[in-house]
Amino acid sequence: MENEIVIKICGSYPIDFVKVDIENNPNFVFQNDQGFETINVFDSDGNTASVNSFLECEHYVSGGWDVIPIERAETFYFDLFSIFAVLSVIVGFIFSKKIKIING
Image: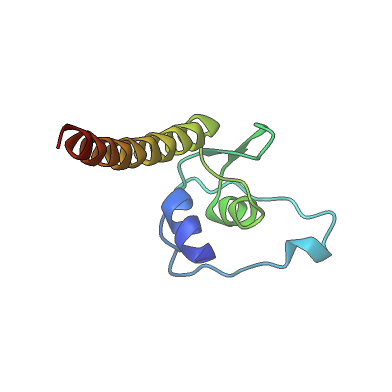
C-alpha cells in the first residue's frame, strides 16, 4: 500500500533506485536529480516541502507527507456529500412508505 502512494505522488520507481537508510545518517543531504520534476508535498499541518529527487520524494511520502491539503478537503467533502445523498434517499423512501400507509 505504501508503495502505491509513493508511485501515485512521486511516479514510478526508477529502475536503478536504491533505498538509502536516511534515519541513521543525521548529516544526509539529498542530491538534486535533473531528470526529476520538482514536486510539492505537504504534511498534516499544511507545511510544504519541495522535493527534487525520487529518493527525497519517497522519503517524505513514506513519512506521511502527501498531496495538497485542498485535495484532502475535497475528498472529505465528496465523501460527506455521498453519505448525505444516501441518507436523503433512505429518509425519502421511509417517508413515502409512511405517507402511503396514512393515506391508505
